[in-house]
Image (tube, rainbow, N blue to C red):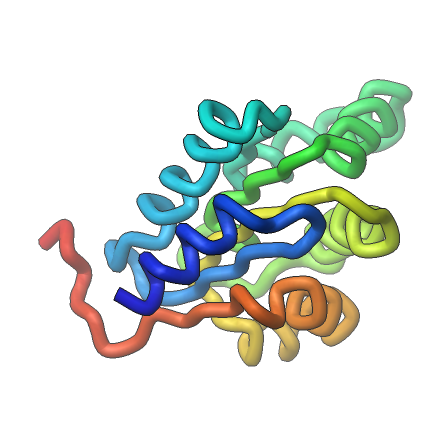
Length: 160
């Protein structure tokens, strides 16, 4: 109920805040974020871009030294609503690489410093865990999502 209430409040009222939800696989994080995204697009008529973190990193790594890279990053930095799903997810639970963390910082820091950019983030990591990877990233998320920073604990994988 708390998560649903926070999600509704965020979807209806956010103008420049961020929504962050962390927790284990299969606990409904992407489901709730997708519901927020749907409301932003259909009811509030906001422009929104969805990215799956692992796919985004793979795409950016291909173009890292090109104009296409800069263009793609700029699109993500400036989109009215950006929804990053499975933020910092890595294969087999490995730590995110320095290059991946740099990409995350490049995108999020720009958004952090601008007004009127809404960011929705789901992750298998909570902000305490993200702070062990990079404190600059976690502190920016924490500040912008201070009213909408949620961690799902003690729930089983609902898909099983």
